Image (cartoon, rainbow, N blue to C red; front, side, top):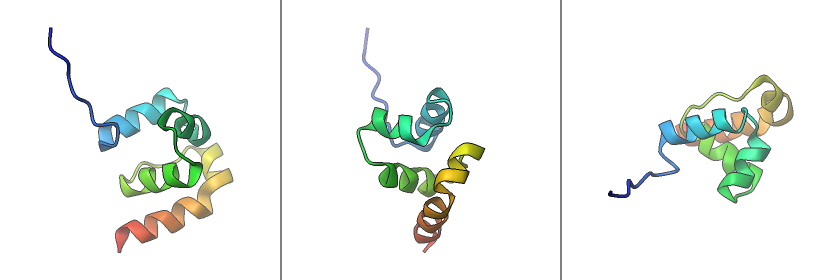
Amino acid sequence: MCSLDVDPLDARVLARNYEYAQKNVRLLALWYECDIQRMLELLAEHDIELSRNDRLQFGADYRTARQASCK
């Protein structure tokens, strides 16, 4: 049996993991062992929309990260 290499920063993997984390940036950041700001940057880079609750908490930071990734 061979091992499959999975890139945790791949857009599809990141989106799926956000779903598994019940669309919770804080929980996903814990899983990825990074700070919340970095997780918001990763989600923004891959155009992964935040949940309503995360938008309320982190919307401004996410928009800033998204604008930075578009440059």
